[in-house]
Amino acid sequence: MKKNALASEVFSRLKKLYPDAHCELNHSNPFELLIATILSAQCTDVRVNMVTPALFKKFPTPAKMAKAKLEDVQEAIKSINFFNNKSKALIGCAQMLVDKHQNEVPQTVEELSELPGVGRKTANVVLGNAFNINTGIVVDTHVKRTTLLLGLTKNTDPEKVEQDLIKLFPNETWTDLSHLLIFLGRRTCIARRPQCDLCVLKDICPSVIKVKKAPQKALRGTK
Image 1 (cartoon, helix red, strand yellow):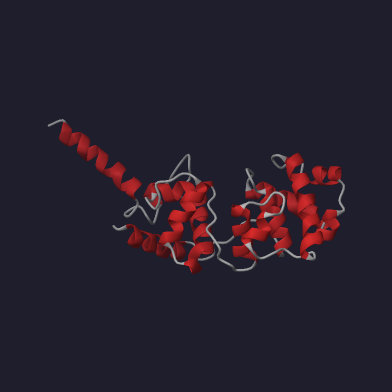
Image 2: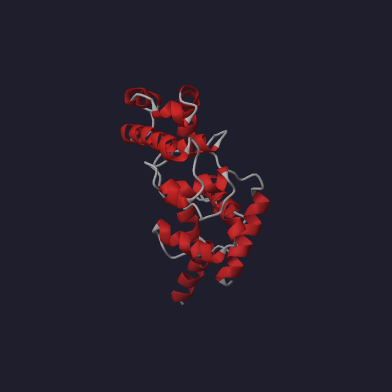
């Protein structure tokens, strides 16, 4: 199957399987999503969702967080990986939102990427999920691994993977695509115990097909 056709079929099947695929970081506004996404770097969404309710109750706005004491933020997120550096990033991010963006979360990759703790991946998450702006494709560990297994990319560098996927999928699907692949990676194509026999993509996944053909090749080699 050609790569463009494969991409289309992958999206179609996953959309039917996971019609409710969504961002699993709990949030009620763009600011909360921005903060949660910064916290999610090298940390699970489950852990972030355990921490953010109390954090947002104490610091519900950029103005409140901008004036926060470092030790108070550290205490609120101490169970998060790299909480010391992330505490500084959260306060710095909030201060820039207050000083440069009138307490609002900006809506461009360039402006978001200027904020402490924010890179292209975080910017894409915020723009796609808070503002429905598809500026890129979020490539986390699940997206990187599943697209490599599916033969949609040969790269492992997130930025290169993103560029490969951008060529294969229409702009309007980019945010949904990330959610669908993340759902696949968390529910079926699990890194340590992939459930290939249960996967809706098993008949078109090059990795599954390759494994199934391997015993036949080995058998032919013994004749």
